[in-house]
Every structure is written in C-alpha cells, then in structure tokens.
Picture 1: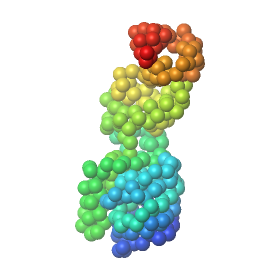
Picture 2 (picture 1 turned 120 degrees about the vertical axis):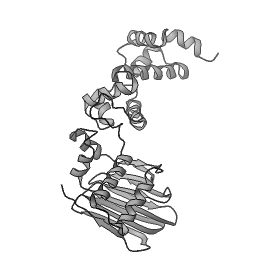
Picture 3 (picture 1 turned 45 degrees about the vertical axis):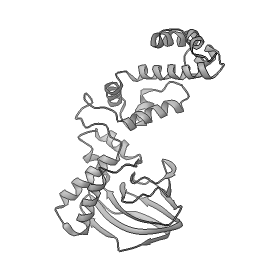
Picture 4 (picture 1 turned 90 degrees about the vertical axis):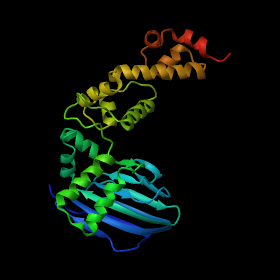
Length: 291
C-alpha cells in the first residue's frame, strides 16, 4: 500500500475562490476546495485512484455523466479508479467540497471486517452516490479542520476517511461472516431493478450477486437472511406479481403471460401461481378485472 497521486482534472469556467488546502498521508490525500462555477461551466476528471467527493452545498444544478449515467450531482459520491466523470453547470454556483483520494489496497483493507477481499475489490470497482449526508457532513467538517491545520496523527485522519468510505458505499450491515449479514434497502432495490430489466426472465444467482458486487455464496446467504427466501423462491414470487399486473392490465392469454415471464409453460405458471396466491391465474383474473 502507499498512495501515489495520479489525477487529471480539466475545467472550463470553474474558478477557485481560495487556494486549495490539502494533506497527504501514506494512504490518502484529502483536499478542500472552495470554488465558483459559471452557468455552462464544464469539468472532465480522471484518476488512477478511487476517490470520495463530499459537497457541503446543494449541487443538484450540476449535471454529471459517468458510469451511472446522466443525473444531477449527489452531495456525496464515490468514484472508482480509472472512471471518467464529466460535469456541466446549469447555473452559476458557489460551492465547497472535500475530495479524498484513496489507495485502493488500503480501501480494500478498510472493508475487510465486512467483505472478503475479492468482494471488496468488486464493490470498489463500482461508482456510488448518496444524496443525504446528514451523518456524513460532520465527519467531512472534521477532516476539513485537519486539512486546515489541526494536525492530529495521520491515523486519526485515515480513520475518518474510512468512515466516509463506509458511509458512501452501498454496504450490508457489518458482520464477520454472512450468517448475521443483511442486504441494505439500496442493495435490494438494485437486485429488483436487475430482475425488472430482465423482463421476467429468470436470473442466475451469479447475475443477482453481480448486481450488488458480492460472491454467489455470500449473496445467497445474506439474501435469505434479508428476505426469508432463497433467490429462486423470491424470483418466483416477483414473477407471479408481474403476472398479476399482466392479468389485470392486458388481454394476453395465460399461456402468453407464462411465455413472457419465463415459465416453462402455462401449467408451470398455473402451479406456481396457485401455490403463492391460492387460486389459478384464470380464476384470479376473473375476480380482479374491472367489470
């Protein structure tokens, strides 16, 4: 481990309001900026190291384009190593923010009480964003104080940076093994979104685990801890929910719905539907379609 700074930032119409203040340790570089962006200002950023940016002002008027798509900039973001990020200011804005550049090996070690190293590295390869920073901002303010000269030991600064990293990343509850671990609400949303994007087709455990950057074995255990169901059971229940929407909102036959949602045939869908809902799809449709 050992942080080596390798960052490129190109901006247009973004002006520093005061000199950048920074502090370097063995594993991180923390920098505090106060700046102004004019309407139409642009930024293009690339770093060989992962980094966290914490904004102390509402920056939703800044549009960002990165691996997560195009969206308003969140107040706390995690940017993986080697990830491009472009920003555009939609109006004039004064803002202050804290950048913390991280040594990747150190960041993986920070996550080691929670995740095996391969899972930690997979998690650190994906961007993350957090719009609510009520708990994170005080940590960021203390880091700014250290950058500006309080000068407690480097360990103190790195511990604060580790807390920010854990707060911004999408992490399950801390556990030394998967027996007591749970998926977060955000992680469940990502699994559900992956299933919805599959248009009802069955996902493998590997595909579901990939959505939240976990190994298959770890994911299977923590998923059951969270939902009380295996991934297969949960998927069947979601597909039945999707079939209910189609039974009400379309005139598709039960056979067509079964085919669309990846059931092997109409009989298979009918059997699963009856197990979960208590009646056949046809009977349920008759009782729930508008007259």
